[in-house]
Every structure is written in structure tokens, then in C-alpha cells.
Image (cartoon, rainbow, N blue to C red; front, top):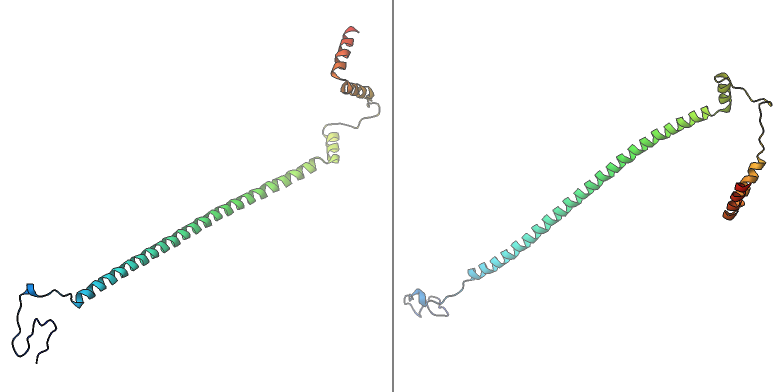
Length: 167
């Protein structure tokens, strides 16, 4: 005996043939495949969105890493430039220091009093001064005059000027 369906559309009781109904009269049922397709489509959309997010995160991570690498390389080049500049300045300092040392040696050699005296005697024909060539100057009057000028006020200077005119 054939199986009986719940809606009793296709089969009748007994051995009779199946009734064929027009397609319009058949109720529309969603098949499990359609439901499964909708669910699988939704799941695949979610998976695609998750994959897109992962891809975007990966690209952002790679860009961040690349940017950091560029920044590190740039800083390294700046440090190298500064080190080169320091080395150039150090070599310049060494040359200036050596020139200063040679100049100091030359000054020390040229300011040797014995060498100056020998040069004056031999090259210029100079001799030491005798007692007859020595002239003494009385500086006490100059010192007193300087002290008076410093101690006098503006009014005293005017009075002294007037006295000098009439005397």
C-alpha cells in the first residue's frame, strides 16, 4: 500500500492512481534546500565580511609596519649625518688645536728675553743704557695734579679756570 501523505493531495486511499492537480492549485512550500541556501548565503556573507575585516586589518598592520620601518630608517640616516658632522668637527678641532699649539710654541720662542737681547745687540747694534744716559723724571707733581683734578668738583673746575684767565 502506498504511503499516505498528510495533505492528501497526491495519494488516495487504496490502489487508485494519483490525482494530478494543476500547478496553480499546489500550495507553495519552501523546501529545505531554499532555507538552507538562505542560511548558507547569510553565513557566507558573514564570512565574507569577516574576511574583508581581516584583510583590512592585515593591510593596516602591513602599512603600520612599513611606516615604522621608514621612520626608523629615516632616524638612522639622521643619526648617521649627525655622526659624520661630529667627526668632521672633531677633525677640524684637532687641526685648530695643533695650529694653536704651534703658534704658542712660536710665541714662546720669540718672547725669550735672551734671544731678544741677542737680536737687539747683534742685528740692531743696541746696547744697555749707561748711568749717563738715564734721565729721571719727577712724577710727584703729576700725581698731585691728577689727584687734584679728580677730587675737584665741577664748580671748583670753573673757579680754577677763571683764576687761570686773570692770573
